[in-house]
Length: 73
Image 1: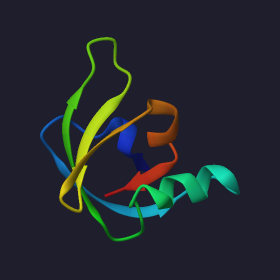
Image 2: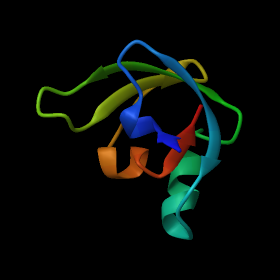
Image 3: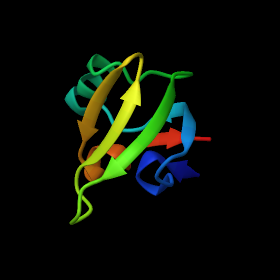
Image 4: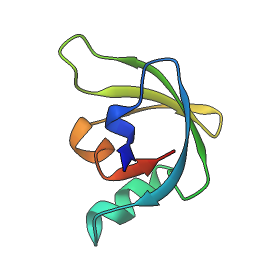
């Protein structure tokens, strides 16, 4: 299982599944991260957290803890 946290900078990945439950899963889905969406990993902050991604035409910064719940291929 590969997660968004492990995706390389400059790569485009596709969401397979969102792990977690309740409010965490709902918050991730509210950001536009749903099954099947393609995410481009733009950059990672100097200390490693957060990760900046582009999806659905907008840019988003997501914490590594949240990115670890997003399974990608």
